[in-house]
Length: 277
Image (cartoon, rainbow, N blue to C red; front, side):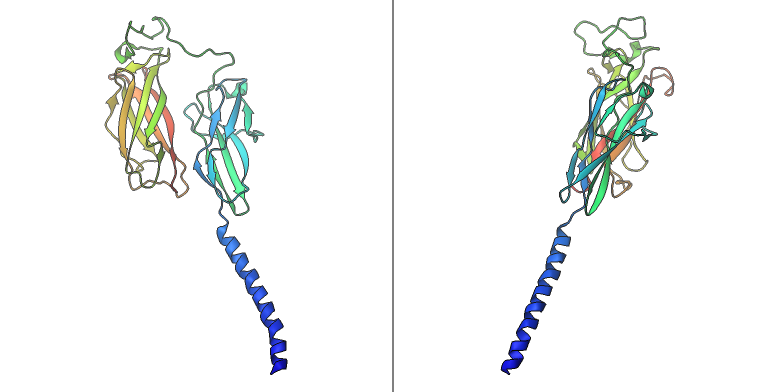
């Protein structure tokens, strides 16, 4: 009996060590988490030929260390139809002459030992020519009415071609759309191409692709050039399980003008989405 005990103890010890190693491996595997973007990357810098743009990674979760790679993309003037810019794979990008008249996005990929995730910024403003000054209100004669003393906006009925309307500011409430968001509000600001806020402009907005959010009736901008529109999420939201942005098509126009001509404008805008919140 004593001999049996002496032989069994080493075997028990070896089995204990083996079980510890196996369970330790399982425990460490369960704690590894692939990167997940919770707030999309942003671009800082002036949207102008010759200027330096810089990418901010945005906000990420996942097991550290997470490494980041970058791909700058050139898009049309509405931020759509994007394609990669050859060789633009750093976190900074100098705007080229060929980029003029287009918008730019940056795509950031976070990677660790357990996987990767990719997120894309909202587009920059349309790239201006080198040395282009910031637009300021201009005198009449170019389609832009003069801003009356004490007024905060010009009337859309006084704006005429060659001036155009532009949707230059958006703000959503809440700031991030989640799976639990049933209703949200977006405020749009409309100005003319001379820099004055425009009151009475008709604004239409819808989600892209269709059936993600409701389509409210067209509304007009107030005396400060703003209009707030309420949307409801529909069965088509989210469009994919990895959706990071909710894209909206927005149009501003003057009543009675052809919606594809006159002083009307169209733009794609993006709202942040976090499906893991």
